[in-house]
Image (cartoon, rainbow, N blue to C red; front, side, top):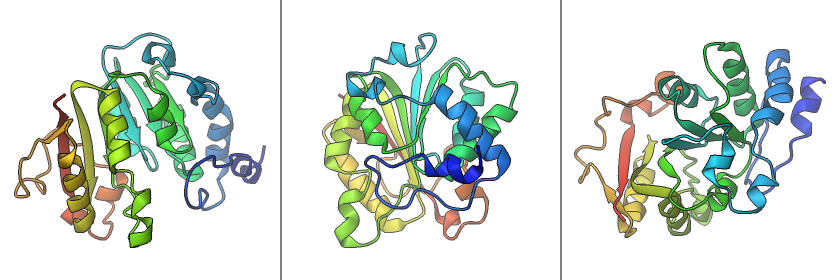
Length: 239
């Protein structure tokens, strides 16, 4: 299958915006065609309550979701550091998913039975998941949707926070980052206002201090505009 056909056959269900970029090279196209069917959550799985024990080949005590993993560097490192955890990664952009799958396939040391992915709107996965099944949710550098009329598309908003709170275990964490100051303020304002979350930093003096355990993604390490002004936000689920 050619790279062009590989990308053309994946159509958005609920995602806003363009999903494809440059034409896929051979290795990425092959990874998309071979690994995506194996690892992708199916529409049938998402059509009813998704029990975390049914997501993976075996059950895990610790389960992590990353929303919008880009080209997958952070998600891949999560997999390396958490070989005994269940990991779900969502990335709507075909090029990013193909890059991650290629890198995953080339890393023979990494098991794949604890990894599942989905290439569309992450909330389709979150809404399907059973209650209190996740230990951590990562949302790194989400789209700021700069125009006021598009703010309703931001991933951090009250109705989505309700869902994040529902699927996180008590004591679980919602982890986010951005280099856009007014988006950082939006994230903190909305998440702190939610009754289920408490901002671990407690105030704005600490949110530019990179936590010792933080894994940088490509966006933060490749000299992206503003990446030196990253805001790091960790929210504990308290209810």
